[in-house]
Amino acid sequence: MSIMNAVQRQYKRTIKYRVLFLMLLPATAVLIFNNYIPMAGVIVAFKTYTFDGGIYGSPWAGFNNFKFLFQTEEAWIATRNTVLYNGAFIIINTFAAIVLAIALNELRNRRLAKFYQSSLLFPYFLSFVAVSYLAYAFLGGGTGFINKSILEPLGLSPISWYSEPAHWIYILPIVNLWKGVGYTMIVYLASIVAIDPEYYEAALIDGASKRQQIMKITIPLMMPVIIIMIILQIGRIFNADFGLFYQVPLNSGPLYPTTNVIDTFVYRSFLLNGNVGMSAAAGFYQAMVGLVIVYLTNYTVRKISKENALF
Amino acid sequence: MINRISWSSNLLLNLLFVIATLACLFPVLIVVSVSLTDENAIIRSGYRIIPEQFSWYAYEFLFKDYAKIVRGYTVSIVVTLLGTFISLLLTSLFAYPISRRDMPFRNPISFFVFFTMLFNGGLVPWYLTYSAAGLKNTLAALIIPLLIVPFNIIIMRIFFTNTIPDSLVESAKIDGAGEFRIYARIILPLSLPVMATIGLFQTLNYWNDWFNSMVFISNNDLVSLQYLMYKVINQIQYLTSGMVDANIAGQELAKIPTETVRMAMAIVGIGPIVFVYPFVQKYFVKGLTIGAVKG
Image: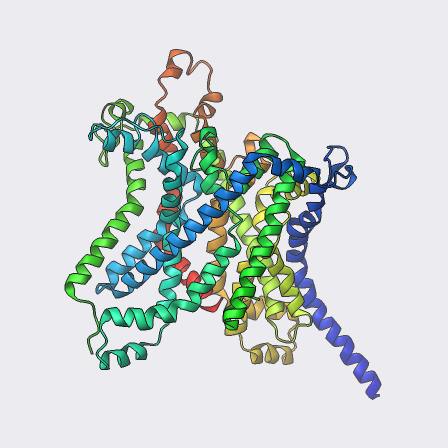
């Protein structure tokens, strides 16, 4: 009788979890189709792709696609641009967001502070296509705001922004800061608001100045969140924001030396030039290096302070 | 005890934020103004924050070909509504079981999701997979890629774990409720805040997406609003392509107000976001804060 009960219980248990497993199915199917099948498809980077053969039927090519890829100067320029821009973005945005978050928290008028916060977050809600229009309003050739309303009254000659690559090493970080700083600021603000007020009360009794409170309490207690945010960004240092680098420069050819990043390089050589093998090789190279970087940053963090590591 | 910054520092910080706020809002204001200005006034004296010579012409011109814009809105709205709804359903269905402490294999299952954040096959195999499945030029190609955002699953799982007590599920089971019934009748109604937040994230994701259109859509009937905006800024001719008939020809074509029409297109595209932003931003901030503190 007790065996019967045990079997019955086990059966009920299975039934119970079967429903929960069933609930996992739809999202699992999407992940398999959208993520895992393409992951297996990375082998196309080692093949000479033919339309009839597809991913699995095309002949093997060994490392030819990679040889071809690294012989192009573009691949190196794109890699350099990706890492340098992302590095600059991490430093600039982190610094600006921390300063703004601390400042916003100190404002006396809370209502105004909310208004500033909303305004700074607003650009985050726009798509990069929309941002490309706003940038165009400033940078457009004849009547753009900078040329017509700033340079002309100053007696300076207009600049053709969309064909001179040198300016974009400043424009891109500015646009990126403009669009993203509100978001990061709010994340940091949340970490400041979460600080126990008793720390400040105690500091005040000890006669600490505002500056001392910020340097000795606020910033140290923000550190875990700052570190996590930076790790997440370093982990993605090999992945550029496609919209920023493709839409905002309006895919303008003369600007490639300073606007081409791995993602735009892959997109253009694949969908615009039809070079399947080389773009697949570039994508594989990006994914592998990216994975190694995530692993290394996490490993380093784990060494320094275990509780801040991601996995 | 008073622990505030001095009035002078307060003034200085306010000044900083006024400048930052202007920097964030000024570009949109100038675009609105340009779209409402006469093209000749723009060529003569450039962009002004208040139109020098007011004109609806850019909008009139844009809406001569209203079919494209209406279609763009239709595609965007359909994709956003369907996508957000399916996404919420799939995300919550996945997040609930792995939030349960008694769920077998919950760690490997979580890793199955988490791993997609660490590694991907890249654009080429991804594109070939969709194209082999016959999804080019379908609405599905605009919906499926954004359905599952691993970060959203993590946020939702954390919410379920933290706000739904085990005892609630236990007592429902004692009352004879099945697992699916518990999910639908107990978990979902208690999860409205997190559903609203993720719903908002996903609405924004779908509404602002142009990448999937750029990659998969060549059929003019499936051009979303963002993709239409992309086409317009890259070639103003696209707008006129369908109307080079008796209405507009030859010299008329040369008179197309390109600058103001571009900016009117921007406003037509950004408009809905500007309109809903004041109402939704506080829920967005709330969601961000959950993710930041807990994640």
